[in-house]
Length: 251
Image (tube, rainbow, N blue to C red):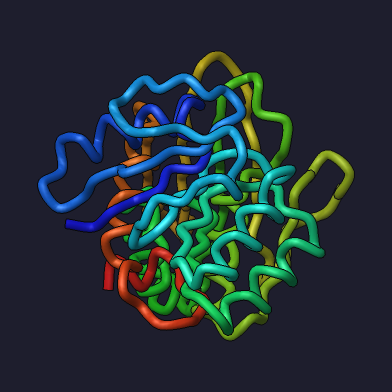
């Protein structure tokens, strides 16, 4: 049984993960940390992370970049493995993640979905065959109307995965409205759509002469990210210092 501290436990994702862990025979949330100190799930909740004295095997953080420094300091001090799901970290915080991973295990990923991380591997195999044969590569991502950043971190991770498979020779084009010319052979186009309540759609398109191959991932609820976080926590518990990602979890 892996014992978990849930940081951001009373937020939407914290509640999703609490529900998933309750149904998982191999995981248990033993404490939570949240500015809203309400105890909603049967475990103690601390409003100050430094007051949390509950023994655990790993922490999951799904909160805000504003809290990331405190989370990283807490986990380094206690040598507590950390599944860091919070996005929008500053360059300074990313440097801290790298530095602290030399002292405790930290798992960070652009997307916690098991499906997306499997997709990252599949498109590399496809690129080595199709892009090498002259197929053009395009990524289209769609998210809800409230999402502020574009393109999504997952779209960029997909582009990076394609580029890595092709030896880093490609460059990215994000806005064709300003480029009045034919696409070149070494570009990856990335397009963003914002509207409604779309949780997250990503299409990776390989377009060649007279045929198109598309890899698609659709997230129908945020539970897919919570499921990945719980699996990551079970994987990371007991691991030595190092910087891990979801590719390690899915093997």
